[in-house]
Image 1 (cartoon, rainbow, N blue to C red):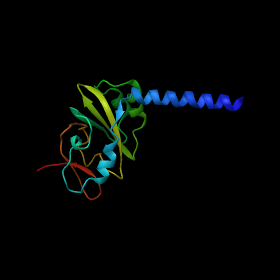
Image 2 (tube, one colour):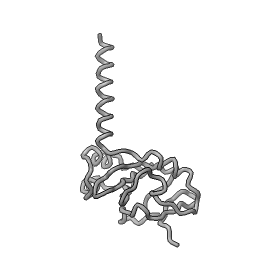
Image 3 (cartoon, helix red, strand yellow):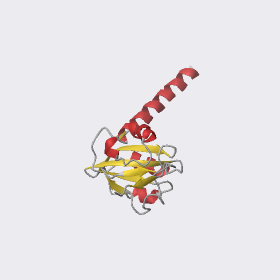
Image 4 (cartoon, rainbow, N blue to C red):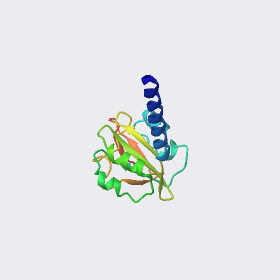
Length: 147
C-alpha cells in the first residue's frame, strides 16, 4: 500500500512539473544543438536556428539581478519569470524570444556551445533584433557582428 502512495505522489509531481513547463512557453530545442555546429568567425542570426519567427530576443546574462528580471517589461508567466530569476547561473545564458511584447519561447545555451555575456556583448544591452547578426570567436564567445 505504501508503494502505491509513493507512485501516486510521483505521478502528481510529474504532472505538476509538466503543467508548469507548458505554462512557461515552449523551448527552442534546436538552438543549442545548432550553435554547437556554428562555424567560428561566420555570422549567424537566431532566425536561422528557430522554427518560428519572433520580433526580438532578450538575453539574460549570468548573474543578472533577479529583481531586474522580475521587472522585465514583457508579458510572461509568473512561472517563467520566477524560473529565469532563480536560474541565472554561470554555466549558461537564457535567451527569451519575444513576439508582440510577450515571451513566446526560451532557450538555455550552455557555455560550451556559445558564451552570451559581457564583456563580449554590451553589458547594458540585453535586447536584440531577432535578425541581429552575431559571430563566435575561437573560444566560442559571442560578439556582435560588424561588417
